[in-house]
Image 1 (cartoon, rainbow, N blue to C red):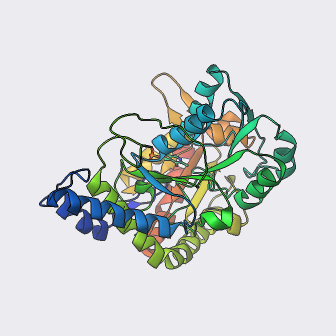
Image 2 (tube, helix red, strand yellow):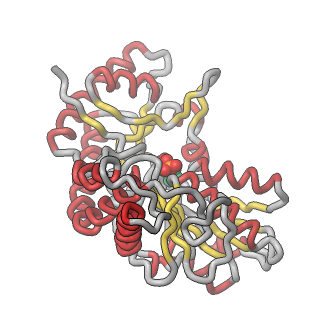
Length: 390
Ligand SMILES: Cc1ncc(COP(=O)(O)O)c(C=O)c1O
């Protein structure tokens, strides 16, 4: 019997059993609508507000608050569209990076169709933006800058604090960061970063899928994305996902208690995986920062010459190991990841890329097993691959 090893925590994390325990009463007996004034409603309201406090505390929110959404995609859509439309009389220029998640990039594309002008900063071969380029890109009509805190594919930790300082000194633009990947794996502090808006997704830090939040600093002009009954202080309508919110509150509490321990372990496992792959295989190239202090803890991304990412992922799956590829498979063709292309990889090298991402529940034994199986899988695939010119 093979071991089962999940190393795809940047895709999603398992629900922490302590999170599930906290949620269950809100799916069973405490099923009230928090917008009702009766006892059942008040019970749900208290739980929602308690969870809000925990999420706010986790990100050290002192000015403004968090608003619950359905996840990272909604929060990113809301931040960009909401700020764009509320501030269009001030300007129509937005700055982003080409390695943002698709929910930022496709929102930018849509905003371009609505008459907004988007500047995409260049990134270097490790995925880092250039702060001078950011400064030069700022204009009188720039209303928003959106730069992710941690890249989901190659783990680049962008210099968001420094970028935000420049934006605040040189312009009147708001600063948004997508922190979906960073939360739970490293400390995230909105006061220290200085950002005006920040996106949070529950399923990246051991809460369920379908729950997230947007942090909004006081004074930020932002339109709602969803109109309706006026929940979340009129900013995000829709009856609250109480159980999901309670789960994310519990997950936030656990992050506060455990992030330094988790981070240390993730760094150790990450280092072991990187060193293990490099020492066991030739012609493999690490994508993203080589300085692990500038890389999302737990994230590893390699291009493996002579193999296809998809085949590697499928064969590892047969051994009970789950990782991701750097390509998105559409029905007709393989599209290499936009992130790998933006850092300058040739499409054929990008196709041979895989992402391995550790999480809270991984152990050293998981990494031992992975390092035992992985070279075997790559060598088997190379033997039959017309791409391999070993
Ligand atoms: C960086 C980043 N932003 C946004 C998202 C989207 O979040 P959600 O799945 O909660 O919609 C993801 C999820 O993959 C992500 O990695």
